[in-house]
Each structure stands twice: as structure tokens, then as C-alpha cells.
Length: 211
Image (cartoon, rainbow, N blue to C red):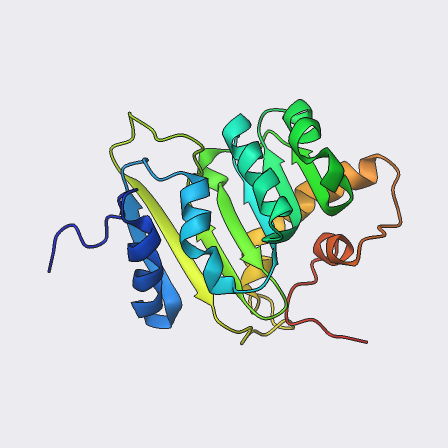
């Protein structure tokens, strides 16, 4: 076996990562980088697997301007419909500068429990989902010898939303939901107008029970 097979370098992530996850048993892949693949590169490499516009949930400690410019592009091009963002350090000014016009489709929380250890990116719509668990960087790291990631692609929602651990979106996004609930309800908000955000806050993930 090629001893570099499960390492994903930034030069090859667009080709190597989608191929790898599609070949992985049950579309569940563990792989490694040297901290040199950014969150933007990960997104551009695998987001096409979800096909249609989707919700993005991004949890990373301290996104810089590069990341917010990228998120702005995602909205402008219709790649994402909603953004759920959690950070360790406040990003209010960058959020307003780059994503202000999309504020009705964004929920944001700053929390002390966000770290590189709890970082992830999740993409989902009513038909497909993709979860990437591991450190999210907006710039290549020079001091990271080895970084581990877990990527899971759900080509269809063959999920059980009734059993305790039957929905992988609920499993990975539970801390995000609690974080966002605390922020929203602390302000006295009781009615959430946007249907997608309301479902997120109430832990309702695909497959949806349509009325």
C-alpha cells in the first residue's frame, strides 16, 4: 500500500478527497493532512457531492477575513442557502462587513467551548449531507505535523430520526444547536421566522416530516 495514500495534500485535494470518500466503506473516511488544507479548499473539493444548494454549519475558533470573503462568495453564487457559524473569538465586525445582506439567513454564536478540537464543517439539504470533523484552518499551518479528519458522505438520507443516535446530523450538530439556542433565546426571541433556521434550532434534520 502507498504510504502516502491517506494523506491529502493541498495540491490534490480537489481530485483525491472526493475519490477517496466515494471508495471508502459506507462513505466514511479517515484521512490526514499536515495542517496545510484550509476550510475553503475542503469545501471546494467536496461540496459538489451534495449537488444542490445547502445549509453550511461551520465551527472554527478564529476565522479571518479570507474565510468571510469566501463565505460571501458562497452566498453570492448560490452555493449555500443558510449559514450557522460558531467561533471562539468575536467576529461581529467581519460578519457585518461581508455577510450583512444575508443576515436573515445566518445565525452566529461566539462561545468559549469552540476550539480546534470541536471544529467541523457540515453541509446538508433535504436529499444529501456531508460531515467533516477536524480542525478548520483559514490559512495553511506551518507548525502542524499531523492533523486527522473524519469525512462522511450521505448520498441519501437513509437515516432514522426516531432512534436516539439514528441521525448523524443531529449527533454532530448537537453542540452547535445548544450554542445557537443560548444566543437566540437570551435575546428574548421566541418566534423564528426562517423555516430552515427554526428546524435547526429545534433539532429537526433530514429526513424531514413534511406536513
